[in-house]
Image 1 (cartoon, one colour):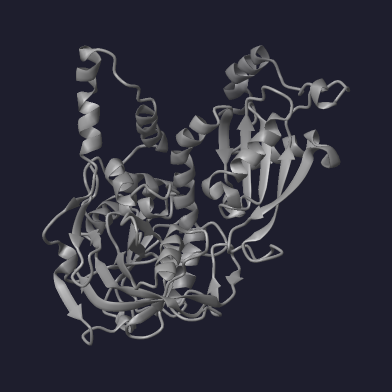
Image 2: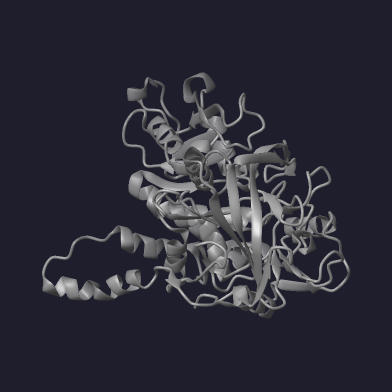
Length: 482
């Protein structure tokens, strides 16, 4: 069953031994980061800081910082459970005959039950603070790293509506705290929120914005999932939950937010107003430089009684965002294979921080097939940011970095098998020649065919026979006592 709110998730984490409550006084100025960074890299639990020096509100962090906690958040035993449900939807064909139509009724009912549902009121509006009654600086917002430009809200669900179509977008964009009622809004150029902002700028219109902090963890996951522009993230959340997300209308604009959120910030962005944002210690493990970004003006704050502030830190992996990214990659594979059925598996190593390295195995069917896949991935959604794509044969375990390195380094002739191209890169890539624009590299590490100009014999791997492996398996305990 899906979690109704963040509090149910915290309860289950604690019962599962996946959460530690910390009562020792700590500061949100760097101290929580240092504690959490050590715990993240040691594979430790979620942390609930109950005695934060700067605020009476407790801080939850690292809640999704392991595979087990991600699976708990999504309510599944493995990511394959969700991938299987996606495959069922993707396999849909028009029913032939009345019997097939009747059999599909439960599936139609399931799909119809996942659309967001507006409710009259929700816990997120138990306490209402209008302009002059709130001060954002009283929230336990972290300064994560020593050279950060200030304190940053790092786990917000940012709700906007397209100024023309009205279609909703929910994204996760960091927000630098400026003063009692304004923050930055880090809408990178490629993000959907930035697209809404550019349309509002063209129309000369103020854009309503709402921010939800803390909620059912599936909502957080949906906000980071790379969906097409016209797909509502709350619809995806409903699909993952198996029931609708209850939404409540904001009090000072027409946007809707999750009814069970812990804290909601309502307000607007004036598209013509920009302000310096950053630096910020980012998920690459390096600081991103200060730049001009839109300003979010908060006009109303609502929250639950005794709210919980959920946040995260990013930096050199592994960290919480790595496990979230892994879940995205595993769940998105069925969709990727629909477009490219030759793909067997794909791995985005944590060290590649999502957009620096993709290792892809394929069923090679024709000359140049590996290069086709490289270029196809660079033209697909957020995979366009991938700096290095390595393509290997279908029998290579892409999740095993040692095996991949051995296989690739043995199988490539660098001049022949490496290609370069130019295109968009992640806005956080500090090494690119220009902001958001640079080069990518593709490596074809597949076995080369005569039809690809390779006329030498391709050697076989020296592997033991299955029969000898079986015999040794039977003798292993006798040989070594275990």
